[in-house]
Length: 251
Ligand SMILES: O=C(CO)COP(=O)(O)O
Image (cartoon, rainbow, N blue to C red; front, side):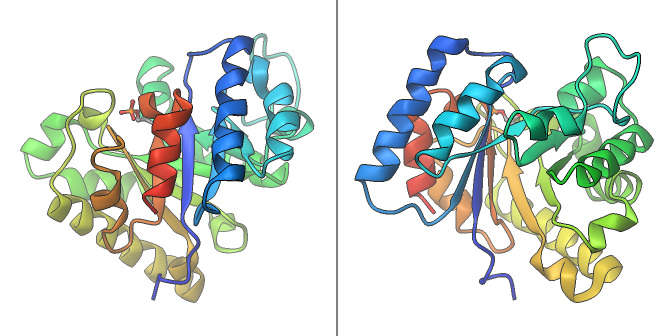
């Protein structure tokens, strides 16, 4: 059912890197254009200050770019914030919304995330909507219910007509070097697929579901082989061109 989905590998640089890190993007571009053609779409989400330069550079080698967050309004008195339209203006085609670090650090609720997704769609961006349980929630057997509730709250009806991407990122697997078992990932992705097809019908079968949380060159192949895993959202390992390229090549 999902075998026709072209996988997508996205790198989330978070608050790492400086303009000098664009040399890593350049190195990645060289690897991607001189090696075997990638079997995945490649997206890099650098800090917003680097987005325009990264987009211009990426365009030369097929690397797409995305923002790491956007405001839910198109413009206004929101000091320090960036709108989805501004990200598009800087060359982004994607935007990460509802990352657990923002849900935690900025008290983002599902309602806020849904409004951001709508703003992203309105600006012509493809939102990468993050969901995932904490360790306590997994230990107490609530992981699937937590993710189902986040999907219900964070994914707007417009998700049925526009391209959206779901990223399942268990909070306890982010930056820890720990991952769920392959069975646990398969169960969660299968559950998300059911939720998407129940809600959006045939279209739900075409929505990419990425896995994120300690994806590394060493585990990428096994994770990307799991049914209904349509790519990865990579943090730390996306900062170095060689590591990121190895993950992309694992598709
Ligand atoms: O949060 C993540 C991507 O959004 C995952 O980060 P790590 O790959 O560093 O665990």
